Length: 309
Image 1: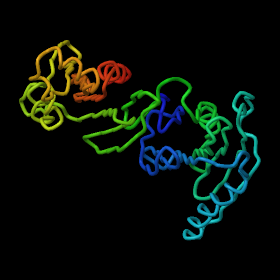
Image 2: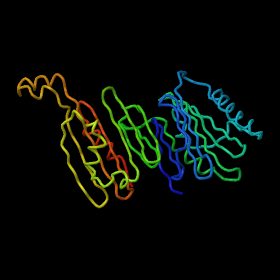
Image 3: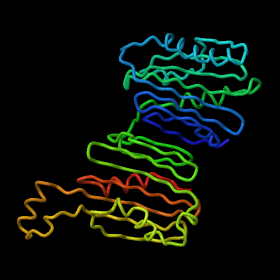
Image 4: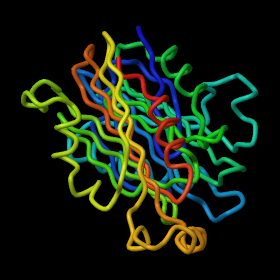
């Protein structure tokens, strides 16, 4: 079994590679995520911020199991729940956390953990599911042991459908689109903006255009008002473009000396794009950054974190 790392909203965990995202709602403060394989739902993840120093995790589980029981009542199926079981023995897992484990059985079986992190103040529930006669103990143990409920470095990992990208922690998710042929993550930090896009089936998307022609047409509105330079590089694995530019202004017509003074007071926005076509995966990736400084470095660092094949 091959494994990968999933990241969303500051939470990361290891998962079997063939588990795909099938449900998503909420934001960084409170949300829900579900993954499934070809057979059935395999994992549910819920998170919420707690204002209490020591929340009652059993009460949170009471509310959680009300929803589970409601679902099984409609199915007229018996539900058996076990609380306070011991699923993880590694002491490191319990550091800076209040933890409780549970199991339940209905049409299928599930093992779960709920914990409150003393550092990020989140309450997180992770539940792994399997068939009734399936042994999920080893898989469950690895997943639970891998869970991090807040970033440990300077970047936050965001993942969906084999796309993994690391974004500076100061940026918050503004919007996202997760479609079969197109993925978008858009982030903001005050006036700074970052976006990550992935287009599927590059040869169809380009429609016999080269990469620069396609970009200029597709992003004509986004690049309007910027003067920029373009660098290109081609290899066996990919075709890549890097665009770096600055916002154009009326002061560009002002004599050089006064313009420098104005520009220093009213720093202009910079615009940077890392754009590439991966020949192995037949996909196009576009990373954009807009900021008054460090846009080029931000776009480059995010692009470098993405493995396209």
